[in-house]
Image 1: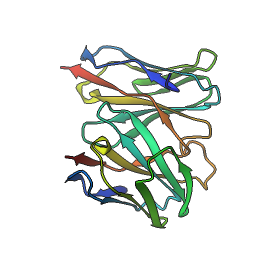
Image 2: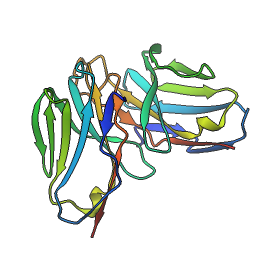
Image 3: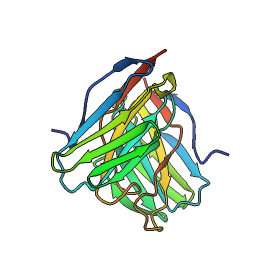
Length: 112
Length: 116
């Protein structure tokens, strides 16, 4: 079993849909949780960062962490074609600038 | 201005060859990383250097040797290339000395390596 499991894809939704992306993990030492977005043929870029359990909202994006269930989610409201990308969850013990363990990534396509 | 740059962008080579990938960052960061992303988009850390000192060395064949001539550069040399080395290799950098856990890693555009 991998340390971080991410829902398999790909995922295709119509424009305006609410998207839910999920990851589970097995290592209880993880304290920092991130979502990266990767456009085709580009490097990943940090989208959301959270520490420990709770919710964090940034515009149309909400990150949710439930440490008791070892489960994290990223919600995208009013999805746009520009949201079409691969989304990777990542986790670490010591912060966004330390060793990151990534999920497999899920490719999202938002249809106009 | 490119924050993290890698050369070359594409690399096609034969099995058994030796090749190098170069990475440079102009962000003034103290830590640099090499990641490998396979064909299924799985991204895994290989190495990390902090101020030219190796701090993360994952289970990677010793055919892979990183080298950091200074804080702004981290190169990856691969000996005796194998078919399974075909992947996209990403360099990243971050500032660790700040002590802020939220300081993110910035990724380069990747080097797509194809071994024939």
